[in-house]
Length: 241
Image 1 (cartoon, rainbow, N blue to C red):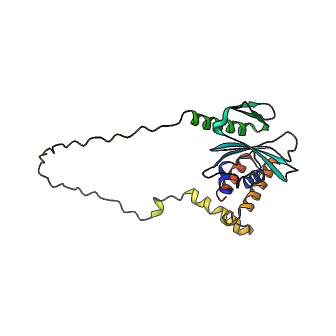
Image 2: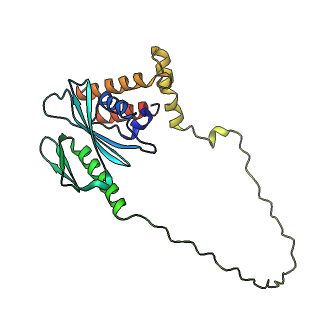
Image 3: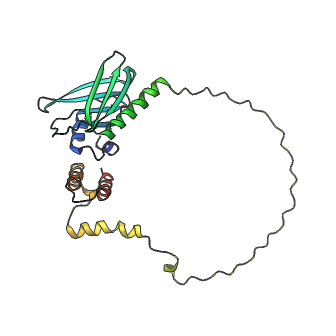
């Protein structure tokens, strides 16, 4: 399931928190069930045990840590049980609320705004798919009608005269083959890693890649690197996860 984190992970989520949730979900997912998105609660103060919402192609799951994080409570509803979903944005985050056909209401507060929007979009798509299923029309075979083959008179083929064009001789391939800057940049990182003795990204394990991604996030939070640098570093790490 770690390979699926690349489409779930973004700047507002802690990689360790996402990994912990997905590890607990491995034995709960049904056959042909895939995780579509995971939103994690982020309160203004330090959130030690945040609640989270997991949406799949079959249901929505609320995950609540219990007993100081030693256990987890799961509450799930199938999409055909859902009646509506709502998002209310505030200054410190957003609230994601959904209601069931049995008039039950559940709300997860203090979600990052972009995560709440993605939850709402995913839920809306799943409920709309149930309301408006795509029914394919039956295919009617077309009758085969025999047609007479027309007789086409062809003109006699004339011999084509090919005109010879003088070609300028190329003495140096360097004049017509410019060096692509992208090739030079491709070798920059391996040379730098070989000089410092640092392990290549392709040789790192999933745990080492998560740790490296966390270090980049701390550098961004402390103002040591810019957002553009962090996005580039994060993209390089995600290629090997």
